[in-house]
Image 1 (cartoon, rainbow, N blue to C red):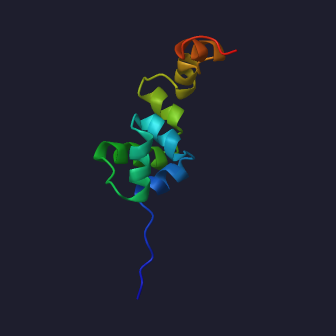
Image 2: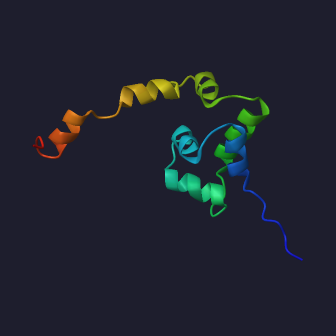
Length: 99
C-alpha cells in the first residue's frame, strides 16, 4: 500500500496566507532557496517561524498586519525604499554606457 505524501506544513501555511515561496522568504528574512527547502520538506521549519505563521493563520493576518503589529516597517515601504536600480545606475556599475 502506498501512502500519499503529506504537504509540508510550511507550504500549506504560506498558501493559506496567500504568499509565494519568494514572498514568504522576503517576509521571514530568509533566502529564497531556504524557503524552497522548507516547502519541499527537505528542511524542518524553525520553531519561531512556525509559531509566527501559525498565529498569522489562526488570526487571519496578512504579512503587513503582522509587521505593523510588531512595530516594523511595512513590506510595501521597504520595497519602495530599496527600489530597483534604473538603467543608468546599472550601466554605471557595468563600467559606463553602452552604445
